[in-house]
Length: 226
Image 1 (tube, rainbow, N blue to C red):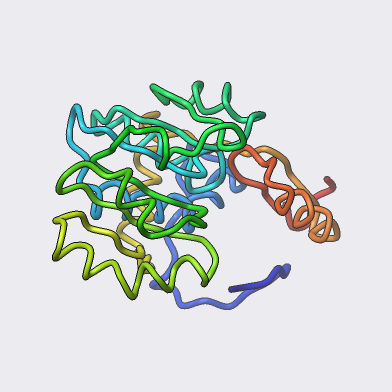
Image 2 (image 1 turned 90 degrees about the vertical axis):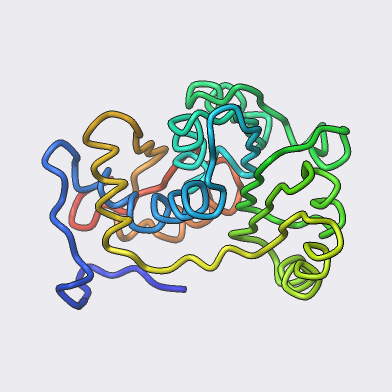
């Protein structure tokens, strides 16, 4: 969906001032990952105190923001990711953690009011099983083989069961970007950077990202040594 370059031309209305208390690298984590999480948790999940929330892919870029935002709204958060990220997710404030290599959250008998799925790859009927009555599931990332059945069958499942299963269509929003930045400046949400790479090391960064081990964001520092 994009590329890496030293310079880029954009419309002025798409930009906001960098928060004074954040580094350029920290601020760079907000526009995509932060906005995805905000629109998922606040707008689609409408998370309320005491609600049970599950974040699948919680140790990655958008997941890190989603866990913190869910907690800030009072949700009881279950975070799902790989073995090496369990302690990291607890440090973000997750109430419960699940190692997806050992447990399938759609088959353990537990149900949730809201599920935000950053790495969707299960059956749409599996997700239905993991939702409470009138619960909502939104996929924000995953394979076409998973997302297409959600688009095709989600509305039918909603009409027949009352459970909402949808794909989250993230919209660019300067207002939302500024909102996440304000939360970061206030100390209510934190940007987490796993590793920094020089522009010449983009292939190395992408390989590490593809391994699924990154905790939070990877940052390309243009014009700086690694």
